[in-house]
Length: 601
Image: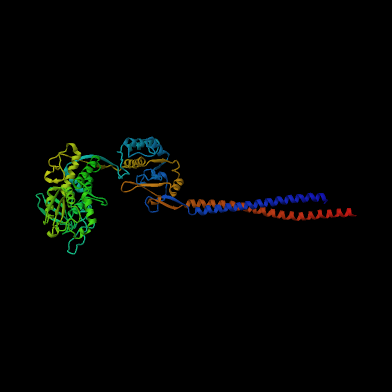
């Protein structure tokens, strides 16, 4: 081979070798990329092994695994008990698909909802729009419209009921109240309380706040004013029904008496006021009891609600004309804590620094009558006088220590109840036209409502449950959905019918389930709190992921094998080129050496 030919061959070998090395490096990078792809495929597969899905198990046994989809929740069926399980967002707005959203718009329901449930006209427009959107058939829409709109379903009711008003007589009202309410023992407003232990002399005393009393009792009188019984601390037979309190045959006088030489009647009046009318920190009162008992039958009628409040205010005005008693009682206990352990407010020991006139005036202002006596046991007298009074009757025994007498306060619970009922009737008949008199003072000056002389009728709300045939079940369902849309608002999501999309919303806390409870109200919660929704292993998804993994793995391995084959061939070629390169290089070197020797010769 000549020198020129050898040099040309050397250049060819060098170029080819460089090309092979570059290709080998590129294949090496491809192999690294395949390794990363394999890692990604493996990670995806590993994640898929823990993949779950949401299923609907109506019976809660784990045997039924229906796919949880939007239609199952929002279409009436036995599987949702014909009540919509609304899909809601974080603001409790109902998430509607395109068809339901179109129906809401057609009915004129704004996305922010309405203030209260609307008329049946709007409800019927919604039902007709559902038919126009092919959510229900026109025939089903007509059947639903024929059912009375149930505007209370989801707001305290689980049944479609028809409402009406009816008038009842006084006797019928009392019978209804008696049948639906309990006695005072089931309504804790403080007629009973735990008596504190007595002092060294065996006497019980007021509590440290001055707003309790140990000498507490209920005296029972007949219509003539003769005492039939006394229930000390209400331990013997403390139950009183509203029917008892409305009776003229029996009168219940609640009496509080301080023990020998302890405290003053101001503290007794203060406690009586709290129990009758309530006070801060006190959950219930006798007035609350009256409102609840009468309201159990008269409630649900707007005019009655206002009249009940008017009657409650009337009792407050009778019992609680000012705040002086509460203030003075508190100050007495704070400044003179020995009042509750035997300290006296009497002539012998003075008034402990208090202004006696202020003290006496406060009792006068707070009482329908006040009995002022020295050295007289006035507890029985006060009870007797309270029997004939409307409002608090109180006593003041100046020489309590020496006379061994008690300061007392009492109130006739029956006259208060009659005043409450009278105020209710007065409001309904018209306050300006009223001839009733029920101001605090002597009962002889009162003019109470008398059912024997009045033809006044009480208006009460009635309801009748609608039959539960299929049309009514469908009406229940769409009325409940309609009510939720109107009250809570709605938002449209045209992807919500996609099972995977809805499932992701639930799992990521972007959507919730709102279901009706036994009390007739809808409550929002996570899908994990719904007894019929289960999160289970998604075997199908895992199988698909496994098949995909195997396919992708095979593809990658095939590519790797091909690359390995090409890289092996390139390595062989590079090795051969290297050998040839060295040989040609030696030929060139020897040719050059011969040329130099020729010229030297």
